[in-house]
Length: 110
Length: 110
DNA sequence: TTTTCTTATCGTAATATTGCAATATTAAAT
DNA sequence: ATTTAATATTGCAATATTACGATAAGAAAA
Image (cartoon, rainbow over all chains, first blue to last red; front, side, top):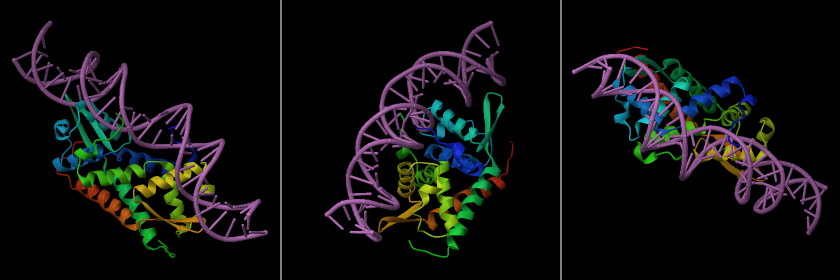
């Protein structure tokens, strides 16, 4: 097939999976890290920072936006992108929760 | 193409992307959550817990294992799978770091 | 040893992703 | 109005992913 059976899983599971999937590419991680580095939202020079052609970068930005990881507003002939704080908090919490539960696991075998 | 240009990004970026990608499917999130729920490593009944055929589940387990998210040991005719604590800690730290940096962002615009 | 039970692998079809050239769009600058 | 400068979209080729039926492999039980 190639398509996920999203309707068989919980909303929360799908939500985390969508976020993780969007971050599942080094170019998109690099975009996030660049946004952190410049410490602002204005980022018209993101294409020059990545070893990818402009349409490819644009596509990655679109995927990050679709997943809700970055927000973008039109501002003249440049776009203002920035990371959604809530999403990152959500991911931190989720994996923190998983980590804590594993640490407190009763029966270990591996 | 279809293949990522992994060699153009840093090891750290690729590492996080590989982990995120492996978690980028609701079935694999469901597997992680099931492993947490049973609070142990032995998990021979994972197929019955998921709305997917046995070969599909096996394939998802393999991907989680390849990414280093779960570890598995053969134990008779069943497999003993469990979540790697370090990986979850790594993800928590990574997203926690991103979140903190965004919170302390000087110039906000979105 | 044959059956049974469980997980892995193979093969394959349907769909998704990745990447980029070409082109479109949009708004500021001239 | 035309040029310029930036991002978005389209179209397409190469590859990856997802899912599952069929089958294999392995060990325990009969």
